[in-house]
Amino acid sequence: MKVIKNEITVIGGYGGGNVGDDALMWNVIKWLNVKFPNITPLLVVYDKKLILNVLKGLSYDVVDTFEDYSVESKVIIYGGGTQFFHFTKDKKKSSIIKKGFKFLLNPLSFFKSLKKHVSKKEVKSNHKFLLGIGFGPFISKETAEYAKFLNVLEEAEHLYVRDSNSFQYIPEAFLSKITKGTDICYNRFFKEILVEANPEKFGNIKKNAIILRDWHYDNVDHEKLLLSLRQLISLKKEERFDLIFFCDQLDSNLKEKFRGLDNLDFWSWDPSSNNLVGFFDRMKTYDLVITSRFHGAIFSALLDIPFITLEIEPKLNVPNQMYGNESILKEPFQLEKLVNLIAIAKDKTIVSEDTNNQLINIGDGMFEDLTSRISKLL
Image (tube, rainbow, N blue to C red):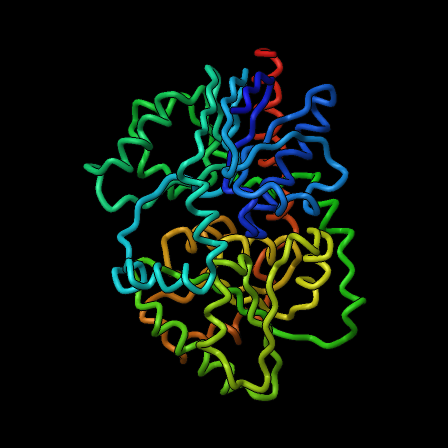
């Protein structure tokens, strides 16, 4: 077992091939490198091979889920995303038979999953901070998942909560150690990456983007949503669409739902051969983004691209609260409603420069406050 004693450890949904989580990871490590240049932060990730390109040029150490380790750190930062929630699984999509079939098709996935669960992992610290975190939903406050969440709140020294929705799950007793923040991607360092993005390498072909995640929970009629999107692409034959997968391993099986459409192309984020600047080079080419991934909306807002969120879960309503607009498609996911939203979205600026700058100032303030707190502990 690898035994590590260090100053700062960062934990999140990193190294799983999801560009939203990869962007959060980059932001936290970039900030630590700038503010604490003499400290090498330790990252806890799923697969260390999938972060090499994303963090190229930054300083960090790393452990992943396929190795045994025991970490004793002065400070732990849980960095961004929605890390604590509890949905009801869709039994049709999560059956043992279906999982078994998946492993037969990809035996390497089976062995990686087995290694992940048998390896021994421990990370300890007396000083834990949650940075830009979203919470919920929870199907009940009587579940083990909610009890675990309360334990996290109890142990945390301070929390920077990403959005107003999350406060409904936080008991009043913990409010004194909570600061209202924003998404981690709102900060001055990340803005530098967005400025570097150069869409010209893709020519002058303009497209619409549809960003989807494969949803395995039974809270919405996901099949109806997919049908409406397919009908939309068929209806607008004169326009080009890209179907984008932020996490190829989890989402790319959705391709089968969209085969045979002549005006549709597919592409996936691949951290083993790309970096964030390259990703935003391509994102910047789109006239419109329709997204069921939270960071599809955040990236669009930062790049000044009109967007529509697809509310497959409550988190997809958060961007509209952040930006003060109603550019969201809710159940029953009607095609007519989506067409109307597109007409409105393409005809106006969804997020003003002033709003983006205000959120960047909030994000910078969140980072600076955490810098001050950590400096007193090291």
